[in-house]
Image 1: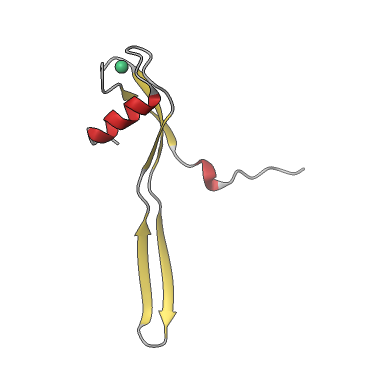
Image 2: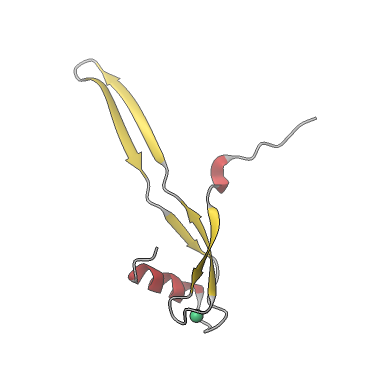
Length: 85
Ligand SMILES: [Zn+2]
């Protein structure tokens, strides 16, 4: 039997945000938390070094608002302006 291994590309989780315009509609989103990667390097002059990098969180807005009819783009822009995503 062969099993297909799911790769790590589908990280993240579905999240519902309240519509920033009418506060009644539910906006379907996909939230992917930023990944932390540690890069270890060793050089002859400086010894061992560790560099920690964190990528920023990613929000994918998947829908507009079904209540007030704002589009996905308008909702995404407003959420960013308000600092929610
Ligand atoms: Zn709305």
